[in-house]
Length: 117
Image (cartoon, rainbow, N blue to C red):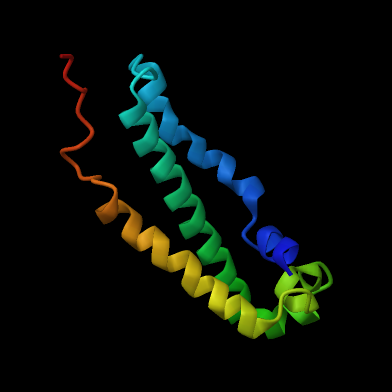
């Protein structure tokens, strides 16, 4: 079931979230662990949030997807990921993505260049 969940979250789509590292790299600040951690936190947050949207969409459309020739192979529609388990995982994906920004010190003011000591 874990493999089905991972496939349902569509990790191949997460590569777009790597753009969060562009600012750190192009500003030549990759040597600052604080900025890399913030970018990594953003990457995980966006990936979980995007995955939760895919989960929610497939949960809402499960009956129609089961009738579709291609979509019926999706994890929920095929039964490889049971609907109740998908709902629980959806809540898990939404919870950390909502809390990670407030818990990581990220704010609009926190993306400034670190001061050198």
